[in-house]
Length: 251
Image (cartoon, rainbow, N blue to C red; front, side):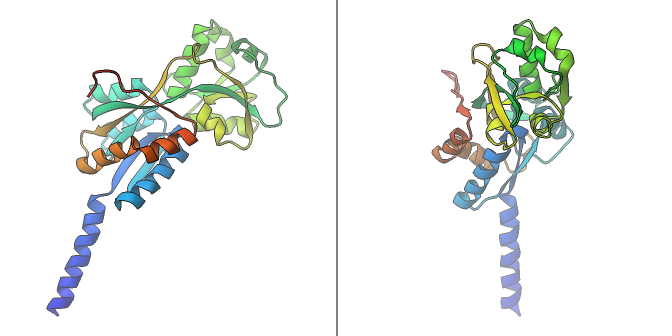
């Protein structure tokens, strides 16, 4: 009987230990495929589980602020990470990835886009909400810099995140969408019509941080370290992301 009780206790302890090592990672929607693959590799290597939660970065900040049990936050922009930092929601912020903007159209579209100005010939363009969603904010900043936002902005349909913007063009509900290069790479129903030149668009940085209220701070820190490993870097690059450079003198 004592042996049975001991075995039951050890089994329970093992379950609790496994749960203790489990972390939740709030990540921008554009990271869906890459981070899902990396989380699986992390679990295989470490035995600890990392569960990704995907949404627009602005939505994720709000969820963390409202007390969602999140251990690591990866934003698609520095602005939302700054909000989280100022609210004392995160710590140990560091740049992780880069990305770029592209114009996608339905796979069967004959639309020709050779410049930002060519978007004016289209009727409906899907972008992330330019007031909140990073991809939309970047798109608006790019078109504003080009002096075209007043003309093209009224044609833009705001989406809750960049994947929703991509879905709109895949379904044929819009003529084009402004999304990340990495989103276009996973689509089978949309094609890249034009890539926004790097010098024309804002610099796109994805920072990562450990959440201040994480109850698994050690596990969160280990996962962030794994995100910068050769194995994770290979996955990110294969998915089209660039690797952000840590500023000189940063710790």
